[in-house]
Image (cartoon, rainbow, N blue to C red; front, side, top):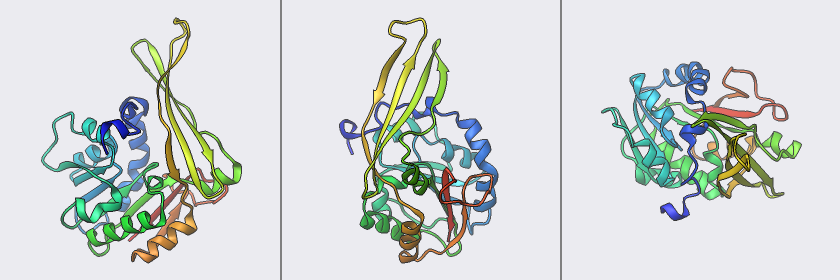
Length: 254
């Protein structure tokens, strides 16, 4: 992927998400799961700008972050890296080719997996991951609960507001749903400054095609790749997964 066809080239995720609060909320469950792994070497799949990977490295893990976005990787390596952290640019569907060695665990968080838009790509990713994981290594998968999104015909995700430079950035994520499970995703950054005229302007907007994978599809693909689902959750606070109520789907497999 080049910068010109990178849908995330102008979206400043590092500034649009309250990372410290998010990681503080997610860390207890991640620590519980990843701490059970057979080694401290981890994969962060769809690492974005690297906030999770850096935090995990600070906790003593050896982390390799992988992302298909050139701009995300460039932001991830913009600051000096500790010896136990590295980043790789590449397509997760070709994971077996782009990373080396064995790992004691892997995470895949946020809207990463839906970027794999075909069953072939999904299974290729999972097979490659399975071959890189040591026996008993946990795979921590979290994504939006598309069962709920399609059932409720939801068109957007919650707004994120971040203040900087005397104004606010508003992170707007619109969706258009298709009957075949595809999702057109429109991540958009608005600049909101009540003193300006106009007070709202579009800083960046992209169109991204995703696949809204649902639990039954994921369980089938995980099984085909040699994984077994150990645990299903609906949030990082460990509440049970409810297909029609949970905002998130968390699958912990090995």
